[in-house]
Image (cartoon, rainbow, N blue to C red; front, side):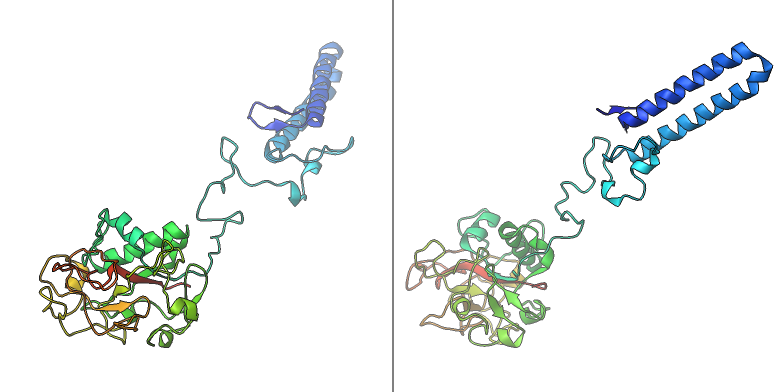
Length: 345
């Protein structure tokens, strides 16, 4: 059984026995000095000094090395010999309460390094995700301001948040919304590739692979782009929906679509980006859209040759689209979803 010395560290039984023996020797030496006079005083002083010095050294060794449970020293061994040159007995540094300094650090694994994440660098924002983050049944519309981040920065933050919800730790991958603005084209925002969905399926190897009618990777993914959970977006709950319209603000080349409007009374804008993703008001420049899965009304995933009818929040999942005379980002069959891509695969 181990006990703790006056510095709070554990002392091995063999060390306690040795210290006790030395202490008794010191007492006997002092008693001898008292009985023998000046001639024994030198020897007694030496013995007492030796006992005190050795006992102190033993105590220091126990304090320094007893952080871990080492083997008991042999009868003739020293306390130092119990742990010196034995790296297998050295434990991690600990806090005052005995917990390891590396415990409970989510940014590192048991080796102290950042965990290796699976390939995951593309998704289409799901309707459930958009509703959860916006707090509205009809979503954000064209105003993607979120959590204090305005416009395109808010869109990036939405991507980061949904990615983290799906794969904890993946927010470090530097997520970007595939959305063009007046200051930057979507194709220039998303890195060089490759990009993978939540299931590790390849979307595209590089920029060229993004610029086809459908992405150039896994055919099953390309024809039915998946949400942040890796679920094909045409049937997120197992039932087919008319939800293909996806905001990009871009043409088929992934660059800002400069023609304006084209979707009804809410059209007539100049840049197809709902004021660079800062407004959901009526009468603004409605977003250019692509299709997350091929439809009779268009197959290109970046731009199908038309815009949404407005920037207002609107969810339309029924066949044949239409909003009954109202305007909004989802009136053609959608909900204001957009693509997210990470700079790190």
